[in-house]
Image 1 (cartoon, rainbow, N blue to C red):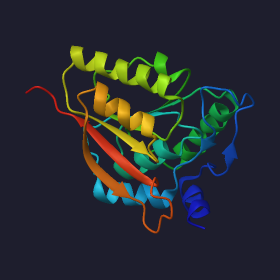
Image 2 (spheres, rainbow, N blue to C red):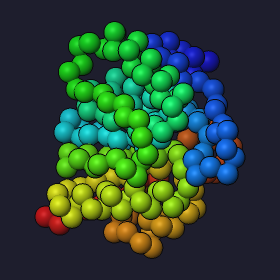
Image 3 (spheres, rainbow, N blue to C red):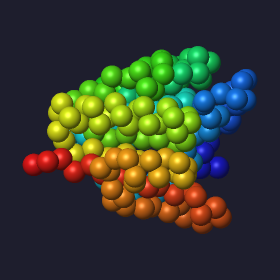
Amino acid sequence: MLERKYDQMLKIRTRGLREWRDQSSQFNRYEATPYVALDKLFQAYKLKKDDEVVDFGCGRGRVPFYIHHHFQIPVTGIEVNDQTFEEALNNKATYRQQAQNIPAPIKLEYGFAEQYEVKETDNRFYFFNPFSVNIFKKVVGNIMGSLEEYDRSVDIILYYPLQEYKSFLKKNTPFYLMNKVRVPKATDKKEKFLIYRYKHKD
């Protein structure tokens, strides 16, 4: 019920699943983060006015539109499934009709996550198991490369975190687990957010 209500409020369509035709793909199926989970996350974890969020594997755009609506900050969504990306663009058109008063940009980019050029202002990165750990390593490597050039505080947010993602961040990066947010009434112990932080050198 909440899923439909939130979609209607934001003037978007993000419900449902989409499997990849190639089951051996490096990419996981489309499934949006539940709104009840997003509400819980952002009760515990606040975004600031100077934050800029990137959602890797944004699907139909639920997380970018939700964040843009609630926090009115710049958001970028990256999606590589052409059909899903077209649906995200359609959602952006209808969302923007009722969000014209929010000056912050909301961008949707079609392409591979590991080819996204991390901007010096990007500092919050969201992942809901969009792809294999091999791609995740490349994306985090790009984030680390950006940090070497533009040192800043950066957070990585994982929803329903894969063990491979967690192990990589713990063993191979300077990111540390900063917070854990559990989803209310969740029956699966994996149904949670893990927030990892890179503390800049200053």
